[in-house]
Amino acid sequence: MDKIAVLVPCYNEEQTIEKVITDWKEQLPEAVIYVYDNNSRDNTVAIAKRAGAVVRHEYMQGKGNVVRRMFREIDAEVYIMVDGDDTYPADYGREMVDLVLKKNADMVVGDRLSSTYFQENKRPFHNFGNSIVKAAINFLFKTEIKDIMTGYRAFSFQFAKSFPILSKGFEIETEMSIHAVDKNMQVENIVIEYRDRPEGSESKLNTYSDGIKVLRTITRLFRNYKPLAFFGVIAGVLALLSILFAAPVFITYLQTGMVPNFPTLIVCGFTMMAAISSLFAGLQLQNSVQKNKQDFEMRLLELEQQKKGLVKKII
Image (cartoon, rainbow, N blue to C red; front, side):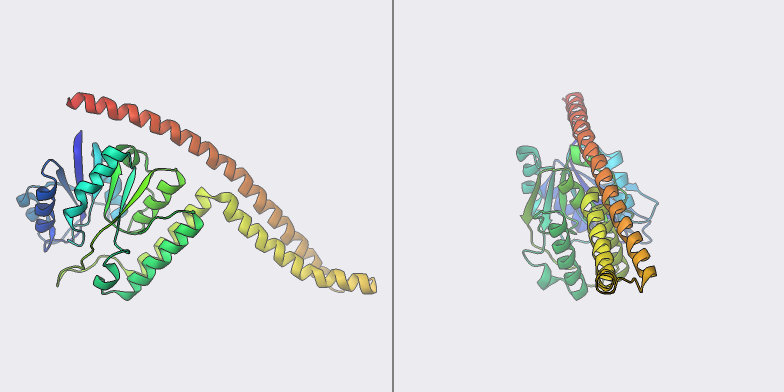
């Protein structure tokens, strides 16, 4: 078991990977640096090996797949995840490690948005998307995470080994954030300096397709983690539509004693039944969610014992 593991998912980062590894060696000389290559077609692997990193591979394309592999294979007391594009300075690594080891943080978020991100980033739609995602998640999940999509984070052993990763691509950071909040894990924010990619280095994030994936992930996780709220909204909308269309029919009936739009009344009745069914589905699923949270807490206790056993083996 490593004391500190620096995890660097990489895809075609030959221009910057050597500097990233060198910087982290200087800041955290006791850490083991793992570079996980994701089918790079350039010299990323050779350069990373030469720089002294432990190089491993994930052949299923996508950052989410890489993170799942890293968390499965590596045991460490604290994990630091950083991109291989040299946009995140290693200077904050020690502070992030201390928050996990000394203050029991489960996830430390490197907050770009409160510092230089909007000045350094040259892609305006990325800026807009980050702000929208942050506002949506903080509103829906009642949290105060400062930067939802940052790739600069630190994790505890318990977080890494209990996080059920379903995302395949860049929506992984969104899934991490929501999981931590939903499971009542301790989340800390650190304001970091962000620098844009160097000239000639290209971002792998597609503003539109990956943006849509992130929004779909938020919707999916809101449904899975807060089913009563999700299905309650659907029930409310259906009930409101039913009442709005049925009201004129009832008013006409009270005035004339006749029902001129009987098919409308039938549709409204079925719509109201759908609203009631949606509400009850939300209630049933909410009970399942509560049971899952109880099981998760027991899983954390097991992981704590597992961690202590691994640490004893090292000693």
